[in-house]
Image (cartoon, rainbow, N blue to C red; front, side, top):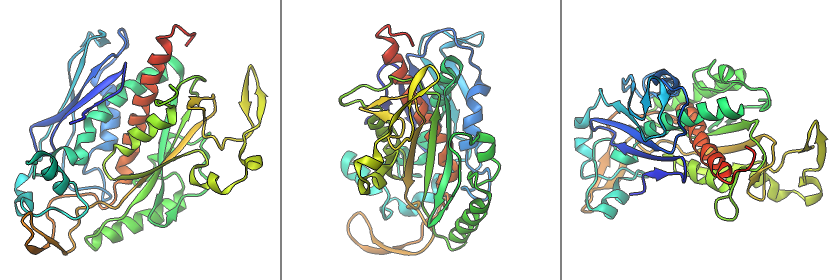
Length: 362
């Protein structure tokens, strides 16, 4: 199983949804950075379940413990062990589904691949696996912010057919994003999104959405052509997230409908450096950051586990009607915001260290 991400800043996650705990091992964090559990806890609190009526009812504090790699609140350069204990496990909720693969869930594919699976909550296919990513990404985010001034802000830009309008990627703040429980800084759209999610929940159904993300103050030169282009690694990171189904950067699929004369980003002088007048490239050209905002979007499907009755079959092919039990988000995107941010931080952190390994002035 591929549970490790990164080249120089390498993160391995572990744990199952209803096991004893989940977490991550970070290998390659530079020494000497001030690091406390609270630095990591901020993003875990934004990701945790039970924080609003938009989320699953599962009650988890998700308190992180730093097991290794830090002494007197300073990183040692040795592997950092991070652990979050599971407290509110209810494996009994999933007994009925032990022999019934949930439609559009990973139950069937895991069983076929390994010949066994963690039937309680999906095990590693559960979104609870992302706790390790968020914890490790919060460490990377702190380093990027303190050494380069990099800012990573994500927000909910669509739920179903409802889209946010007028969000200024150059100025939007995390405080504005978190001002509404749906994590959309467009106040009017946020209320409509909330109503849409609550309607789906009331009908024992689910709904999908889109998370947008901007990275500001990213230095020029991050990205490793040919196969480890910046946008390629971002796409890999985002499409590795549970329920993600699409990724686009800059103009994305819209750019396919434009002519080059309109799509090209003309260069202009911006103070001491060159910049671009427009940003259809999304801050990346030739797989390398160009100093402009990196702007991308991630599409998330509706949650697969729903309470509505669905006709399906058991593992041995007998037709049954499944009404899934357990506690699940009616829409993943409000809680996906910090996950997108921290996965982005993991990509940028690894590429920054790779660029610095060339002894370039970074």
